[in-house]
Amino acid sequence: MCTSHPCPPLKYLSNKVRGMLCHCGSQNKYARLDAKLEKKMIEVKKSSSGHSNFKSIDSVILRFPQFKDGLKNIKSVFEQYDEDSNGTIDREELKKCLEELQLHLKEEEIEDLFKSCDIDGSEGIQFNEFIVLLCLIYLLTTPSSSSMSKMGSPQLKATFDAIVEVFLFLDKNGDGRLNKKDMVKTLNESYPREKSPAHVTRTRFEEMDWDRNGKVSFREFLFALISWIGIDNDEEIAEME
Image (spheres, helix red, strand yellow):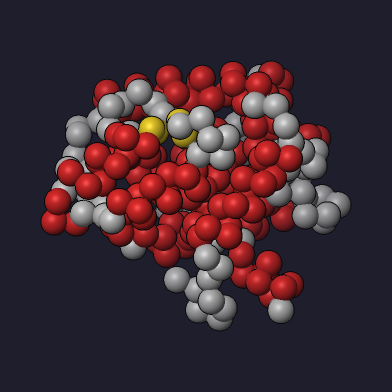
């Protein structure tokens, strides 16, 4: 998946993100947004046809290059609104960004998104967090085609839709959250010809379940998926060398 550098192990990436999440303390700040996301995912699941393009964890991983290609152009949007070029977008920069993207959110909604995506508690949204934030806005508000085009990628809507489809594929019982039992059942029983090894399925779930409560919200899933895709890791690898 990486051309110029070998990709870091998925476990390293997930543990890094989990460590940042644990560092920032209380889970209460996520509760309101996660409840909205749970309700939305239930609605999307009920309205879907039931058909899925994904049959195993391998079929998901094979789409990583396509996901990465669909998301990478968001970088130019991020850099445009990171006005002081410090690698993060603060609250005022975010408000300006959302306004110019014609994403009309209430003050409370912006604050919920900011707190829920600022997983390291730095009071600034980094690039990977910005991707998650835009995907959450897309899911919760259904932006206009004009807003989507301003986000920097013509295939962004299709990419976000495919990411939502991955979550729905894993959400066996349609309750808007992932749990280990149903996820294992989905990957190992629904399509036996593409059965995923049990230890692989368990490991992937643990990489998503940062707070170890046995449930994975769409927000947790998004952060794990962005880490697995490696959307912003080329720069990190270069810095380590």
